[in-house]
Length: 494
Ligand code: ADP
Image (cartoon, rainbow, N blue to C red; front, side):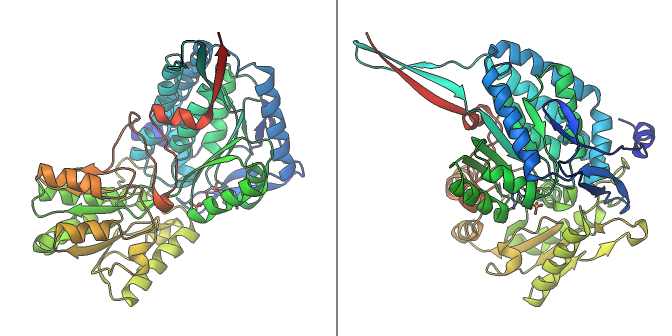
């Protein structure tokens, strides 16, 4: 990846996009269109099909037909693996073009998007492709007179609804295990980050995925997403997004066919720094990256810093220095460390959180404002708010922006109480050189992930999922396959 290649791609014209249904690119049933805009400069990139309930019904019917005819679902796992490996190869061959296209639409800094988007999607598809022909059923330890077999079967039609921050990475976390297990899929990208998912779906066809097995319906959440939630033909819904939408999906499921819903709903992740952390300078840098990269638009962002009182002032000063040293700007420049805030709406929300926190008594140590206004894009300076009281809105709610809430603590017990003092439970961090304390904290912190002496950067081998109102069910690792499979028992009298 070099700047010249990025610059050659950044102005490429992107034509109008349709849905991908039954292997065909099709317009919305009523011809509706919606624009997608770049947060880099506020300009319109292209138009997308603005999906309808009828589009969802058509995609679900096609997905069901493909599932029933067995062209994918009843292929030997080794045959599915072959197609998926080819798909990963095609994605990798276009990695830079995909990364640039995605950044133009969502504003993530290219240095991160290149690895975290196309690269990670290809790796995820490979991981589940390689896993699927190594997974066995079971023979139950029954009495001698019977044989109990446990089969794993694909569930049928999987609906995937994904957000805009890492469309390819999060999309692949759902598509790859669902497809590897033999399901058909209907995917709804976020209205503001659809282009790269449409492109990789086209590449799947090229790789040999039979038409109808993977369908993409673009459009608005309350229309396309709702129709998927209420669909009688979707068996499992896999979602990443806000808690408010997650709640709606559970309601839709209750009102329709009781489809299983897996929800990944973000967090307010505590990052706990004890005075005995092995390297406080490193801890400050990594903690800053843990909240500020991708402008804080990361579900596992380390958005609450809990720091032991005895080191509070020095540590926070180091962190502020790290925050101020980040280069914020054009997401397509390799120099940039923090790209754009995704939208005007998101930026307004971020700024409101800062104002509110100040009104509630927190001190703004750096940032807090919109910057680079002459670009026409949406940018915000990394923001550190100190003295954030645990019961205030900034301490309790996900901002999804570059805003860090700092709160001091005196004892390990107080650190645990603060860490667990929100409705969320997605990610967390603990910095200490005391091995026993690290293990006590791993047990005590209520979260899907506890990082020790680092933050972020896990790989596919481990699950990622939340507890509490951060959701249920995990993406990544072999455990994710179970979400897209049913167990079937055969009880055979001998
Ligand atoms: P965010 O605030 O991060 O955009 P959302 O939950 O609104 O989070 O969006 C995540 C995904 O959920 C997007 O694909 C969006 O279109 C979809 N979505 C939004 N509202 C609904 C809804 N009412 N029903 C189903 N999906 C929805």
